Length: 267
Image 1 (spheres, rainbow, N blue to C red):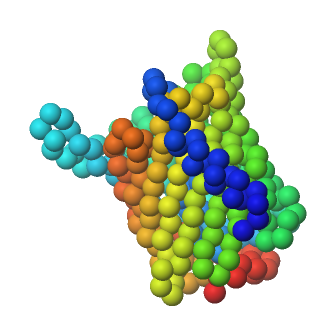
Image 2 (cartoon, helix red, strand yellow):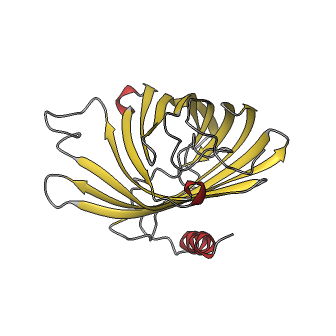
């Protein structure tokens, strides 16, 4: 594995070991669930279209009687990624909240391949807008959240893949603008023929302060029915230390088109 990938992984582990003080709100996204799967290039191929849809619900432990509340939050993520030209991908994700409805969001992203073998390195730009509170200007309540992905990388072999991203966050708003940084990593491992397992880990530091920042983690089991059709079962936790509500998701991804075959070694 190239040295820069190991350095990124070690840096992520060091961040998770930092002392935790006052809680800070995270705006992190992590590595997108639809991307942590076999043979998914960092930037999809020209004319390739990825369609994905899922159903997500939370499991919450209610105190003081420690009962479990299922479905406190329920959402249907619907998204598409499209390869445009030879080195550009554009994508959108509508996270349609069924309950509570006000938590629906729209994420728009573009990513540019930097020309390395197997599209291993890229940069991107992301904005996530809460729906239902959009003002006459772009963004909710005159807020425009932006995140620059630099770098984004993906390394893939015949049995496993590793993807990561460092995002520099900047939010235009009334009053002082806010900023921060997020580091995220995801791994995919073959477990039997077409079956695979995945994990993800991320931490986001508003104002570049990681003290008390929530640690997002997740795990998944998936099955690659064909090169174009993948299903996943996903479990995620927004803050591993505080044992915040768990989210469970069923995700289906369908890929079509593409001017050439991705040169991944994953059979």
